[in-house]
Image 1 (tube, rainbow, N blue to C red):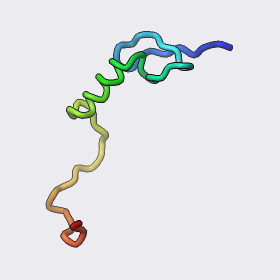
Image 2: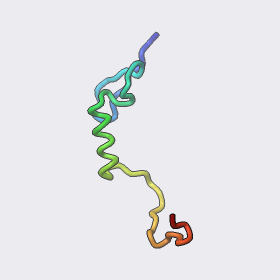
Image 3: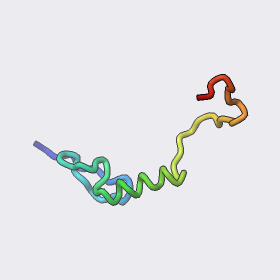
Length: 61
């Protein structure tokens, strides 16, 4: 069986898919770097911006 190899999205190290608990990353370090980038707003998903003033008062908790 041929192992699929792909580059880690963070450091580009060639990585195998099977038996890799950190996939798609090569290591826990790269996984945490990616998480930090999302947490610090370095990454975002395109979409319409929401205004806080559009908040529906009837939906208060």
